[in-house]
Length: 68
Image (cartoon, rainbow, N blue to C red; front, top):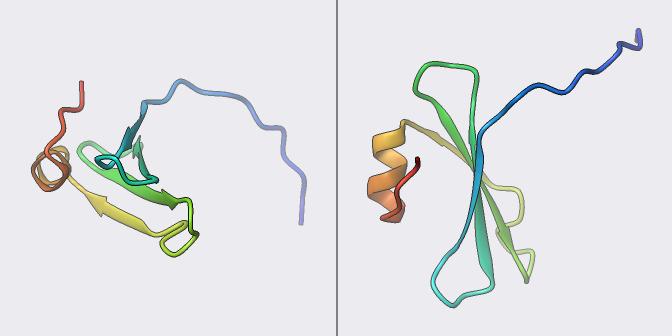
């Protein structure tokens, strides 16, 4: 494996807590036109690292949030 130099690029991420539960979702805008990753994190590690993919509209509708 060849090592490569890494450089930081601008990105868009959001983090939301789901209600009063100890559960967070991290939303990451990918490099594709309208594709986002939703990464789950919870205090009990039951759902830790689960990833969903979806459009902005799908994610906003499912989680009742607004991505600006």
